[in-house]
Length: 159
Image 1 (tube, rainbow, N blue to C red):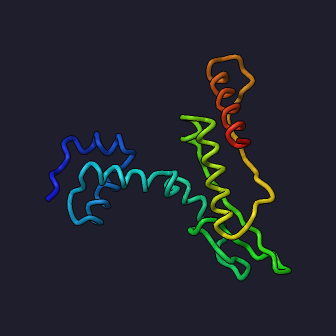
Image 2: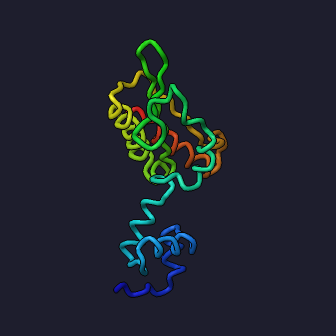
């Protein structure tokens, strides 16, 4: 039997979970979760793992058609482009890891993309990276930090 956690609202806030998430966790488990279980759900339901906030935007893209060999959910997407060829696509967001540790965050993001492309039996011929950092030209402290992030992220992608 699991003992209810004290100050559950504080624990949920620290784990970026809502009361609705908590109710759903209790329904899944059939009981109150312990702290370790809350941590596991927090990680698995994070933006990085489940695209929690961007799922509604991603759901607008077409995913089922005769030329779709592999749609979302398994490593990378695969599209039949004719002539016995396929194009493999993968998108990854490493905003938070790159903000915390720019080089490693970006490097692991690109590494994950390459891994998922390789897993589908393909070899990459191009890697496109959309980078957004705001205005890096001002002389203020925020721009200085953004320039630091840009340098680290670009180095991490290259590395």
